[in-house]
Length: 99
Image (cartoon, rainbow, N blue to C red):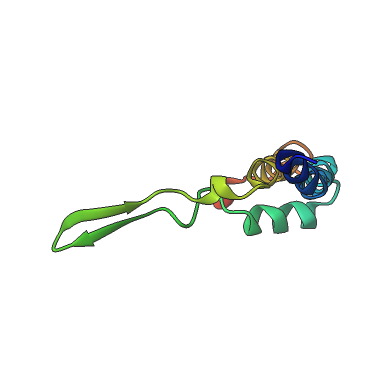
């Protein structure tokens, strides 16, 4: 066997597990206001890791948002969006406090 074929077969189980988790997160339906509020609070609206490092009033370094390195980033953002939409459309709540 060629080494590249071993590498591709070794990666398939991991990627299939990632795809299963992604699909599971995408398939979550929001039907409960308590769950929607909880998800809207737990999933941040912006990446919490992005920072500017200041020294003596000058920016000396910038840490970029690392959230996009998370393999489930898009699914979490979508889940938060669906939760907020449920709160607005079904519950009629003001979601300004979650932003």
